[in-house]
Length: 122
Image (tube, rainbow, N blue to C red; front, side, top):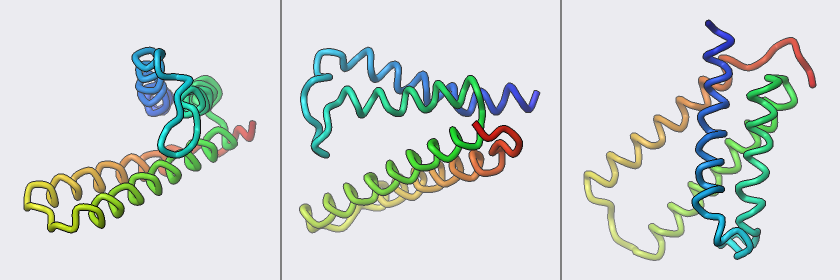
């Protein structure tokens, strides 16, 4: 049962990236605001989550965590820039929603840490 849960932890983001890849196939050659093509923004995480879903290794787990912290950094950077551009205070609902997202995102990171692989290196 634990093995199935671990595979689902990586299968769900894999399916999300595959869905994004399929729905955005017309814009894959255009550049994102980060200066990378959308093809690579979808392809690299898809390969990492596919590998980790199949293999569940320490190397794959480290790659997933690198993605996790990269998206966390991008998310925080975008929020700071949005707050600086607008220059306005958040309403209570926006502030509450922001902290709900933070708690969920950190909870996902904690789950990845708890169920990390401990035996298979590659």
